[in-house]
Amino acid sequence: MAIRTQTRPQDGALNMAEISVLLPVYNGAAYLDETLASLRQQDFSAFEVLCIDDCSTDDSRAVIQRHADADDRITYMNTGQNLGSAAKAVNFAAPHATGRWFVYSSQDDLFSPDWLSQLHARAVETGADAVLPDVVFYHRDGAEDRRITGYRGDRTAILSGREAFVASLDWTIPGNALWPMRLLKTNGFDDFNAFADEYTVRRFFLACDSIAFCEGVFFYRQDNAAAITKGPSAARLDAADASLRLWQLICDNDFGPDVHGPFALRTLRAAIRAQAIVFNAPHLASEMPRLTEVWRAMHCSEAFQTSLAASGSSAFKRSVYQRAVRSHAWFLRLARLSALMARRKSR
Image 1 (cartoon, helix red, strand yellow):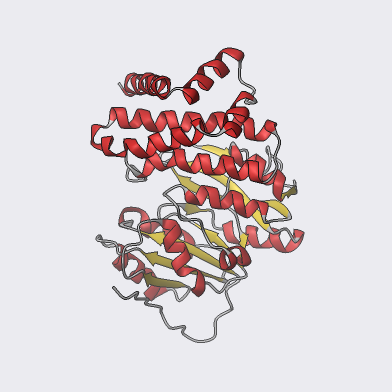
Image 2 (spheres, helix red, strand yellow):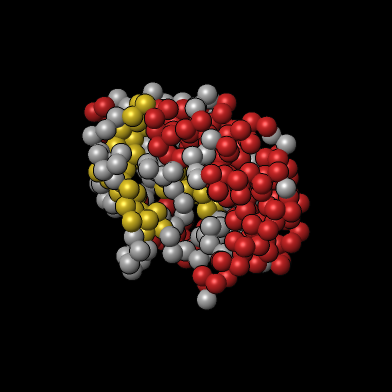
């Protein structure tokens, strides 16, 4: 199928876009109107929004078109055929982005009115390659919200790319940044699976010299039941492979055992959790082979096992987890235990 793109013509002379907002969309009508309204309420005007519709089957196109008809900064794009991931949709739109910087958002996120102006002002003030806003893990009722502010609460901090990379591994800082456009144009987003964007932002940090922070707020929605991180799905199982790839990126960039050791443990736990999801969701049984391949990659890697030994956990836990890497049967036992605990927690 031929790729089709629909772009609104510009009415009169508008400012060149300083910032391109990349918004992949697939069946996002439930929250999309609220997200686009939040963007249109920004107190910063020099931006464009590229809404990349990955062949939605709901009313997403109509929602986008209504906002595009009212605001020339919003562009509707259609991939022409379903690409199957947000990362692929972003790469589809990349040649059309005109900003000096870009930001990425999901179709259900929200923003403070000064989100873009704060990001832009801080980038100009500091000359930093990338700027991070506060991130609020947002629920409509606000009951479970938590907030990441600056670097350990300090918005005046300036981090090197490597420092930011390490801080991002445990979400001390988020990855929802204002990035230089060169990162998108040069290599784009990794698209190997549903969690490839989390790998990509860590790669972006390594390509930056300095990272700054600002007072704008990105509201990262947590109460969308249709999100891939909610409920059992084949896409959610991708987290294990993505974590293993990120562990390899850590090692390839010569970080020490204080960094790659704890992340090796995190990777093994991600694989155990993914296997537990399969045990609790029989309709995902056909996904078992690819989880076995993730386990096999850890099992066959002497470097991974050495890294796991440096995880910093207690001797007992190290012994248990090292046994899970050496024996698939033991790995499955831990996954069954994890599945049992998840069932009890959900009651």
